[in-house]
View 1 (cartoon, rainbow, N blue to C red):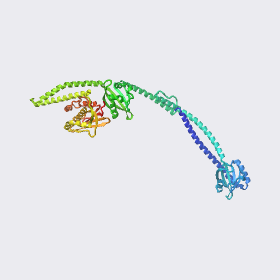
View 2: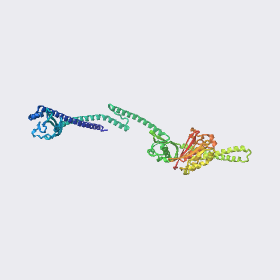
View 3: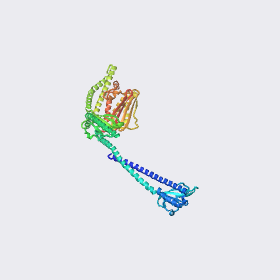
View 4: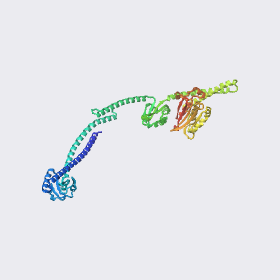
Length: 592
């Protein structure tokens, strides 16, 4: 940009020079052609004139007078004149002695004139003078139109060349002056154009360096003034926008710094771009050890990496509970969602962690309380069950009545016993006191074997049960007993809440590093407002039906905890009176 005026000047000057050279060649060529044509016409005119004079005055018979006439004429018209007989001998010549001149019968212009051409022309080297000449020959006729002689006029081509050379030199001088003037004008115009452009470049350079207070000063005309005003307006707009962005950034930073929840932003390459102080505290690392590093470097310890990978792979929100054991045991409710850039391209993942350690502690206390109460209730329930069995003996008099009530006592005692067992089992799961016995399981055959235990319930309601195909093997790592409980609970619920002659379908699908086990039915379904609560303990959508089916209200809560103990998750999709689909998502391999 610093030499733009010079480049413009040189370009303009070279263009002008090229045009002037072309113009010079054109004018020179036209001038030479015009001058040559003029000489030719002059030669023809004089040749014809002398031919008529000789023919009229009968000068061919008077050689001396003819020779004197030619000599005088040459002084006036500055050209050589020669008169030649039909036989080719020179009768008279304005420059040389005819007697000393050779026969001209072999000259091309003489032969052409003798053959009857009105005007014959030839350009060649003169044998007499030794220079290039232009010859014009015109025949002389007598009264009977017989050729009695030839008048030849000639002119030196060197004189034509000298004349055109002087003309070219003069033309070159004029065009050189024009070129010099053009260069001066080009430099002036280039400087006048590039000066405001330099100001604009300087201003945009300041804007690039984020100096939005810089302005273009000076008065310009035309489009350059409009450009300068536009750049100034752009700088003012950028300055205003920068102020707004900085204010918004300060507000956002203040909000993030004061959030009790941890927030972290991971880009599409898996690199951490932003983190707030709460997240630093949760991860027990300084931001310098987290920012611009891959999330795998710190997320494996608390199970965060697997969730982030899931969001990247499935492009869906994930909500899960994770645990950190360093420096103290902490539990977090992790909400991980994808975020998008322009054109809906995935830009990365947003991670929000809520510290639920205290909440889980309170739940643990409540779980312990339920366990203690259950232990306290177990003995009287066992007693009631024993007395009921005794009263069912044959010693009772009013057998029908007593049997009816005693049967109720027995059923309720068994139900209370199941409730206590479920409470105890759930308490153990929540405390993580049940160790996982991990082994490799072929899940399709495993499901087929488990569902056989429910054949009675299925046949009783005439349910059409569809199992996954066992032709293809699908393996995962897990605890057989817990997986058994998960599948039994889900299939039992599907059967219990299906209409007679309904259908229940179990599917198994492998995707990426996860196994998807879904149980679908076309039963009563779940109302939309209850979907978020069905995994709560003792929550029943239809209390009467739950009691009638013998349920304790803890089945799905147990399933959820068992799935989570396998580092998996469970999803539910349901439409009331149309059916429900429960999907368990488990990793193929259990990571320690």
